Amino acid sequence: MLKNDKKIKGKVEVLVGNLNISNKVSKIFDPNIVDFLDEISKEIFKKKKNLSFQDLATFAFWIRKKNILKISDNYPLKDRMIGYGLAFHISPSNIPMNFAYSLVFGLLSGNNNILRLPSKKFIQTYVLCNIINKILKKKKYKIFSKRICLIRYEKSDEVSSYFSKKSDIRIIWGGDKTIDQFKKYATSARCIDITFPDRYSISALGSEKLMELSNVEFNRIVERFYNDTYIMDQKGCSSPQAIVWFGRKNKQVKVKFYEILSKIVSQKYDQSLATTNEKISNLSIIAAKLDVTFQMHFKNFNLVTVKPKKFNTEIEKIRPYNGTFVEINLDSIKNIKKIISKKCQTITYYGIKHNELKNIIIKSGTLGVDRIVPVGRALDMSLVWDGKDLIYSLSRIIAN
Image (cartoon, rainbow, N blue to C red; front, side):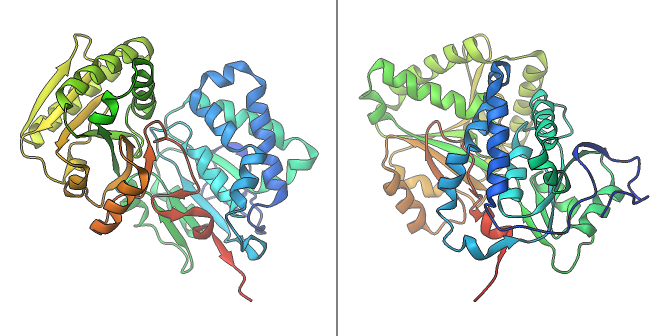
């Protein structure tokens, strides 16, 4: 289909599959695709060194056959739902495994896939590409070499425009600037764009419930918060960038929380010179944009809180990373609606019931908040993302 086209010859590096993409789609949750993903999962788990990458191990666990079949039960119309066509995926440059989930979304929804890999050369990317290439050599799975093409190319209007014209679906993860750029490229009349713009997330913590915990339980909650935030340097849209404290005894709880968090960061977080420089740069930008107070915890600079003097809903303008958190105090969790904008994606929580928080958000009629999950599950991937069911969004239903 695309293999011999001179317009892109020599401009695109193919790491997996080939550009001779099939023009035939399949039903959603096709059994062969489920088996293919399960084979990838098993291959990842074979080598202990693969599991040293937590995001790769999490991905392998998620694509197990047992889990995918369980997810498929949520789609009662799956026997008459098929792929839409050729999906062109643009993955973000700063998140190692996002491309892998995007590929799975495309496959499970029955589509053929061309996916632009992150520009940053993560080790996880190469590990997974090598595993997929190994599996594609097996007779049973050779057919998928015409349904998958993972590529890398330097930023190029010509190449991006070319693939956009050929696509039936574009899945754009790169944020506002990337989305704006790709909207300039012409597409076919039926092409569907699934976009994931810049978002921010928050963590709502109830001080009274935290005070009731034993030291072991308290430490476990802080460890989960660390996993939500520091593992990806807060650069994932679902990683909390603000901590919303509510309830009494805030001061006492916060001191304990930050002390434990700082110890965990000192033990686990690899804060390189580049990371520190990026942190200082971001703090300078925040200081220039807003009237805020900075509070730096502990000498090793591993935790910084930003306290706006007059907080409003424009938290997305602050955009802290690398262990920098906007700190907000509320008398009641009911007031959380006052700090939510339409760019808010995920709320992680502890110290409040899920249904209570969900009802507050729904009743407020806010345009923001697409996920409400317990602390520790911010980075869990799902087929429902940014409020979109990706199987329904990426497939078509054959009506009776």
